[in-house]
Length: 335
Image 1 (cartoon, rainbow, N blue to C red):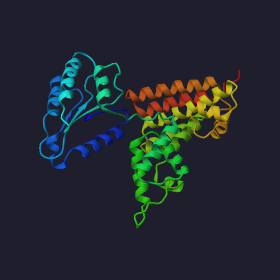
Image 2: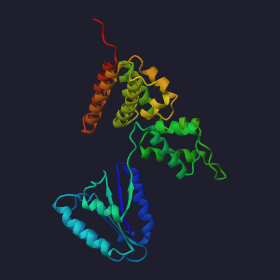
Image 3: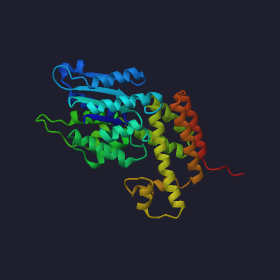
Image 4: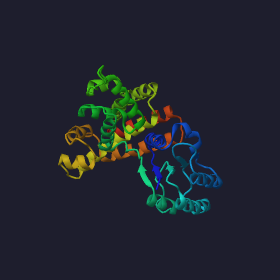
């Protein structure tokens, strides 16, 4: 049955999948006649009308696609919609496709979600958490393979650090690297670290440098770097995400060592560090810091992220929280 459920907070990949589906099932000449999109917040009547369109034969060549964005899963409206959806699925022709998209994970308790999961093709497009470097690296590797772009392991690591979990930037950088590496005969050079350094923005690395200045309790240098990052249009939430990822990793290393663990592989697994050899250097980073200090930094960073997501003024908020972070990382004063 041609029913699809796409969900997740990775808007870029989700929209890319939607475009691919549209290109696959619709004839370009008849697209304006056979594509119907019902936006989030539409009335029940509009949703039901969309379902009615789905059982209507397509015009001309190709199939029909009805795209429903965030239809309700609970409440009185959802009960009416569920009844109509069950009726529609029972008579949905093979030439019609129903697509449901949700920004977040649909509530599994919802009858509508259960019905779609049972009868539809479900695809998840969730962003990898910024601190899960192994997932980000795998995403970079998979995307490079899809684009038939050969890369060395070192180049993959560097690109993963540069883009983080921003898939829109990832695809943009991969396209840039592929264009640069395409030879006159059509072959593509293997991407090495030098190419990544030359062509890809290094703001992620600068954010990691910011984490190091904060860790050392040096507000002057940290604030100067914040100014530079914002001047280069680095998104404040990406700065925040990088800091959270780095301080979370430092805290895990410190906690594991404080508990008596000495096996670098065990520490790396708990802290989600891809290369266990990094554990030694990370432990040296936080040698002068206590677990309590690192825990306090995460509290401050959570406050920073919440403030930015609530729309507070970015520059002042970042500066204030960076000062607080530096103070939290400074050694206690002797009396």
